[in-house]
Amino acid sequence: MERERRERTMGMAWSGAATAESLARTFFEALDARDPDRLRATLADHATFRALPHHDPIRPADEIVDYFGRVVSSYPTARWEVTDAIGDGDRAAVQFVVREYSPALDQDLIAEQVVIVRAANGLLVNLVGYYDTAEFRRVFWDDAG
Image (cartoon, rainbow, N blue to C red):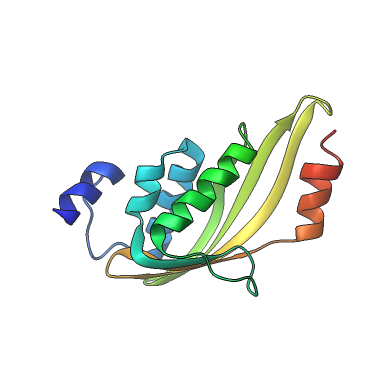
């Protein structure tokens, strides 16, 4: 039953052989589409997420989905796009861009970020974000107008 739910939700044949890179790409596609079911389908029940390396982890998977629901609500027109990924089976480093148009500045606000992911049994089990918090605050809060 779990396998069928994941296949239906992810829109592809789910397999225990999914790589960390492919799962991370699907995670960000779901985030960009604001599709919490598809996002959840990439995560193991016991998955953990840290926005930055020394932050307390958010867990389990349903709490991670709730967290990202709040993120996309805070940036209603933002887009998430994977720009590069380096993967090796159960681990991947994924570079992505968060982009949101600012009418006040008449330009896109852009932040490049990286997340390190680990997978096991075809699901993401750990995600750790790395980004310049001062740059993000400046671009998305201070300069956004």
